[in-house]
Amino acid sequence: MATHRIGVLLNRNRCAYSYALADALDAVAADQEIELEYWPVGWASSTDLVDSTEFEETLGRAADVSGLVMFSAVFSHGLKTLAKFTQAWWPRPAASIGYRLPLVPSVVVDNRSAMHAATRHLIQEHGRRDIVFIRGRADSQEATDRYFGFRQALNEGHLILDASRVLEGDFTRQSALVALGKLPPTTPVDALIASNDEMALAAMIELERRGLRVPSDVSVIGFDDVPAAAHARSPLTTMRQPYEALAQKAIALVNEQCEGRHVPALTGVPVDFVHRVSCGCGAPR
Image (cartoon, rainbow, N blue to C red; front, side, top):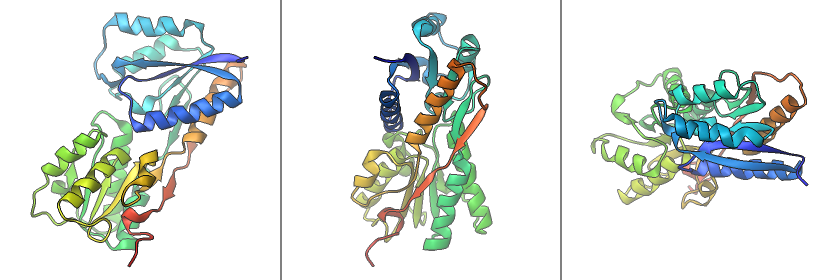
């Protein structure tokens, strides 16, 4: 029998990252005999305040749970609705995964340092100089942090940031294809970094369609290490989200609050650099 129930707040339009995180959360909950109740909400991607009816419905469903885990990384970080929700929920036990929320103990990764390491790897280990970067959603703090990590590594490598090589995406495969379609055809490219694996996987297919070989012509790196990354035609080098650690720490934070214990406002977990073929590591010579 379950010891208690925890609600999980996530986006209605699921992505590979949220599925992988949910799998890890399910495994941790099963080990601890905790029942999880998932609440996908449409207002996750809204930067504006949503209709109060949907908002109150979400709070109403949360009345019977001991605590709440929020997949905040996939929410809009315009924060209007999410901030209002957390204010209404406080001081009940909660944990945020992926984004630091006011009033909510949060578990995060260092996106900036991780993307800095990925970019530096391409520059120092593979000699890449003409690097295209596909950004994530404009309303995502994680996407912004990854972009600034990229910029920092370029600066340290004495490379000029070329605005034509910075493309706008939204974490979806289709957005990567649209972004690459806007890249001037005469632009030299010897590497591509995407803000998540979904965009990197789509970009690899499009680059090969154009006759460019990965990794001999173009190195590619993603972010998240979703299951499809390891099974791509050129297995994708990526920065692995520590799904298991994120899930364990989030549930531990909720459990400790349920017991009346003090918990830290912010907990950091490291990102793993997974070296595969797509960047050039392990590729046949």
